[in-house]
Length: 61
Image (cartoon, rainbow, N blue to C red):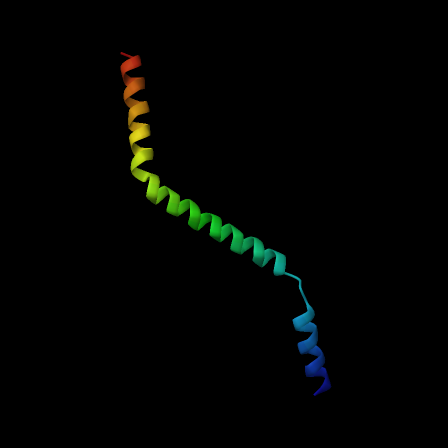
């Protein structure tokens, strides 16, 4: 019984991997934010690239 209690205490006190999990959560949050921004700004981004394309096509004529 004592070894199980000691093992549980060691497991709770062990902080290895916590930083990796935190970085993973931050990366996931950044990914969600980027996807949301791309969704919200998608039409504006498309219009900007279309404008650049048209300008370049006209300049090369």
